Image 1 (cartoon, rainbow, N blue to C red):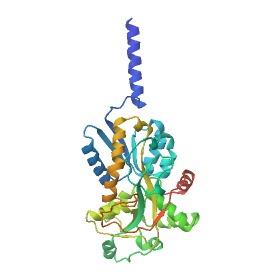
Image 2 (tube, rainbow, N blue to C red):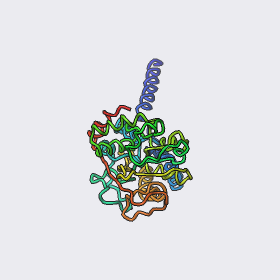
Image 3 (cartoon, helix red, strand yellow):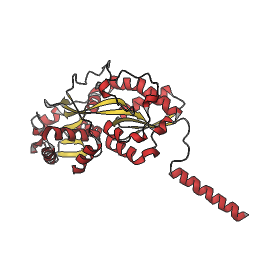
Image 4 (cartoon, helix red, strand yellow):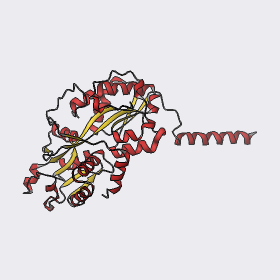
Length: 329
């Protein structure tokens, strides 16, 4: 009899261990996990609003650069830990439709989204226009007695060696958008030839656009290919640099906000997601990322350029994977 009890005890222990590793232990009802590719300043503002609205919930916002965020959802599949995904470039969201909830089932008081940005399969709502820009520290260039660049071609000049940074397309949606922009602008072979030359002047390929801004503010670089709303946020905090599109269209893409199937079974996550779309998204566009996703959008950040010349790219999975396979930095 003792041997039988011992065996039962061992089996119970093994099962508990397996459940914990497989994510089968039931999550507490008030726990909500959000994967976010919005920067930490914005995530803090999101969490402040959500916590004030839902003080009874334990809301965890986990920041990941776009490429990492997308790869994680792909790898986790239906076993994802995320209830909600925010700020992920929509080419990744389209790749994981099988794990996303059908949002047409939910009666949200949705903002008036731009019709051409809506997902016709109802798996995500528009979250932001991800636009890219070149941020230039004029003061540092003047101190170094270097000319102000006026084109992307100027960035290849050896005089800017070590003074340029950009996000890595393998880990960052912004880096991927820049890559797609140059392929469209120059053709595939000439685009990769351009980046081979640019890499000789690049101080570091950062994992995210926010890393480029940190390097620029710390004066580790003088020129950053980065995300427009990250740059505008730093300008609003008093940083000194200028923004330029070099008389070109602004490389841009669209990110979305979505609820996973796991999240759709979580009452707390349903409430958080509804509030995120109806209230937090409006605050975010007013304060941080004013790229137009609403028909009647209100803009309150004077540092954000007016009439950004968007060049929108939403690549399919095969095209994105093909380009990233060729990227060697």
